[in-house]
Length: 393
Image 1 (cartoon, rainbow, N blue to C red):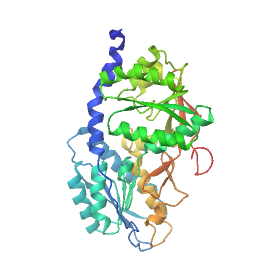
Image 2 (cartoon, rainbow, N blue to C red):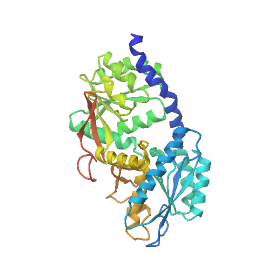
Image 3 (cartoon, one colour):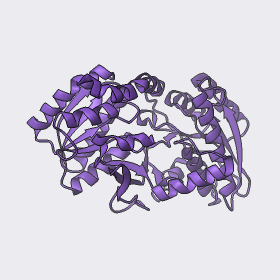
Image 4 (cartoon, one colour):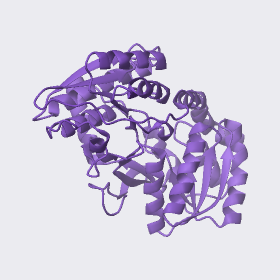
């Protein structure tokens, strides 16, 4: 029996520590800030925008991400028509202290708005530093706990994903949901987002099962999940696990425990189509997850590769979106084009991954498609909405 589980455990084990470290960087306490009205713009003049990316970071992965974020931002600037953006790039080295100093330098240099930085801790430090200077910040983070005041998050949030999937599940008659989450920051935030979304969409949370973020934790959780699903009469299980963590183990062990895709509907808070080898896992076949508008995302990847000779990092498009939103607002010619009221306009913006808009609380909504995996291929079940009305929101 243990030999059969070995490949999945090896896949999962390599990433447990990495993901835990990334979420540790994202963890911080929210700061309540006022202001956010934005500086006054002079119509016709180029808008000075500061881009804060982790140039100089010790991690090769973050160095590549920094390059891709800058490349995507420059691509967005080149695409703008009828408005000029003076893009100024500042390296943060992935450090909150350096990000804060970079933000202060940027404002002193005349920046009217800041796009970035990457990590939530750094974004929090930046927003505090420039709040009194009436400058708004569009961070690449997806951590909703830091949003508010002059800080807006560009990253796709758990709340957004959970709401999209819960709504779709309810329309398919899957309303009794069991939540399975990891006992860490990511898992706790995911659990909260799922349970709120299920209730908001008319469903019932039949129970929840937490597991320690380790291989043994996953193994120990399987019988608990089976018992909770049976006792609560669940018709769907909503997992916070992703392909870089516990998903490979769960996708193998839950079917072997009698909870295969034909017996239980699975929903995933993370994307189940990346990396590509995830599509081969038997347990993910038929599961539901969300993804950005495939056509728009493919168009961006192709353009980015044509310009830079390689595919973009998965979140590089956030930099494009930030610049595109600023450009669309500045094109209006209004002096208050970068105010909180302008940034949170209900119509939203067109991004490389689909339509999106900022909420009043600093979080965001994104138009997401609902997808599944059939015969090891991604199939779209419901297209991403093209505007903020009707199904999908």
